[in-house]
Structures are given as structure tokens and as C-alpha cells.
Image 1 (tube, helix red, strand yellow):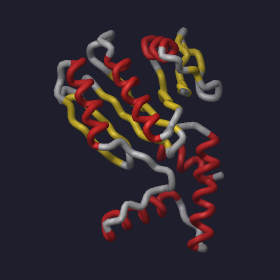
Image 2 (cartoon, helix red, strand yellow):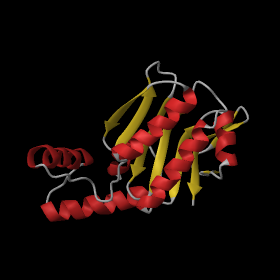
Image 3 (tube, one colour):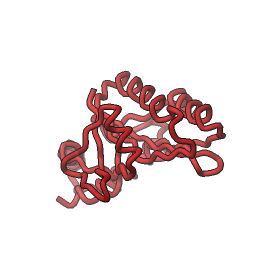
Amino acid sequence: MQMDVVVLRAFGVLHNVYFCELGRMLYHFNEHFRQSLSLCDILWYNYYKRNNRGVVMVLPGMLELTEKQTQLLVSIIEEKQSCACEVSNSMHTVWITSDDGENELRVAFLGRFALVISRVGFENKRRGTMTALLSVLKEICESYGVHRIIMQSVLTKEMEAFCRKSGFTPDQNSTMEVDGVLIGDYFLDF
């Protein structure tokens, strides 16, 4: 299905259940409008509805962090890493980076299915930064009724160890061992 390729590039997450759900949403959307629409068409439609009508119309089931939730994440990073951070919001994705570029966190909800942590990098290791962030992210997920967190593209031994210590399990469909590190995606169901 061509849509899988577009969705893969747009969200960067391999998960067939979500692709099937998105496919069903697009099918019903197309049936309603009696035309063939791409994901780009729907995103444009959402942009148009938001900017020209004052109505927030997004793909069904899309969630995003509130300003208060984002600020809580920022305060944890700033406190634990002794840095100042900036926030960028784009397409329901929150990207927090320090002024010097040495610290970053990028998170986004994958519909109502999961929260995806797609970028993690901290200059000062072993300060409990990710442990504190994960605790807050789990609370946020629970408040939305989301019970899965995906740690996307784990590449280092340290992050693999953190994932395992925190109860994440490797996704059998997207992980492989490279130089003694099981790289790929990890899931935490709670």
C-alpha cells in the first residue's frame, strides 16, 4: 500500500497496527469526500481548517502535549542538565533543545496508540534526567488513556541499558544486534 511509505516518512515509526488504523481513517475520509486524498491533502486540509476558520481539525485521535506539560519537561532538562532550553512545536511534535545544542528531547503522540520518544541526547549522563522525564511522560500518557511509550531508534549501549532497566522490551520487527548493542525500537506497555 503506497500510504505506508508516506506514513513511514511522515511519522518515522514502524507499526503495522497504526498503519492499518490510519488506512481505515483515510478510507472513510475519502469515502466522505468521494475523492482520492493523500496524507498531504489531509494535512493541508487540517492546516486550512486551523488557520482560516479558527477550528482545530486534525487526523482523528491525534493528541499533543499542552504548554504546561511541555514546560514541565523543559524544567526537568534545565534543572538536571544545568542549561537553558528552547521549544519547537511542529505537526504535534515537541522538540526541546538546549541553547548549546548538547541536550535534546523530541516526543510526539502516535494517535491515541502511543507516545514516541524519537530523539534523546544529554551532555551530562547519569543524573536521572531520562528517569525523571519518563516518569512525567508516563503520567501524561495515563491522563490521555495512552498505555504505550515507544523509544525509537535506540543506538547506544547506555540507552539500551536504560530501556531494559525501565521495563521496555525490544520490538522484534525493528531491532538487530550491532557491535553488541541491540539497536532499534523499544516498547514500554503499562
